[in-house]
Length: 176
Image 1 (tube, rainbow, N blue to C red):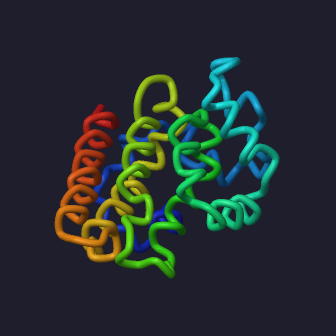
Image 2 (cartoon, rainbow, N blue to C red):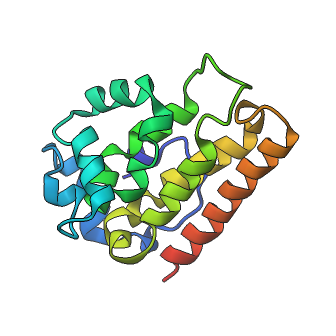
């Protein structure tokens, strides 16, 4: 577990993480199923996420998301927790990666903060709560590098506020 969190600035105690889910992504190499994307059996937005990413490996999903992040961003809000858990690195890598449009837009940082927040609610929480240290580290990264996420001070503030609200929400959601 220490290797998983190496390099993060998070100070979350491991007591917040439910043991069966601490390493679930690392223990399960199979791709998320349609039910993992849509555990609600018929959610139209979850089904859209399935059509966009279902059956794709992480590498394939990274490539597809890079083609048009504006189009695919909300899929991370509506996919089920198990699918989100599997594909979360796509969000991390997108926000940390290089952008040819740096300064022109927020690189989907504002909406992605809301997508992650949605995953830390309701029945998805049990599947994603072990991602909290990574989410908090990503929030630190976005806020520490806010100049990469927007064209002006107003947009920078809007993005920073979304990630601050996300941190507050995640910390409250994982409190014992």
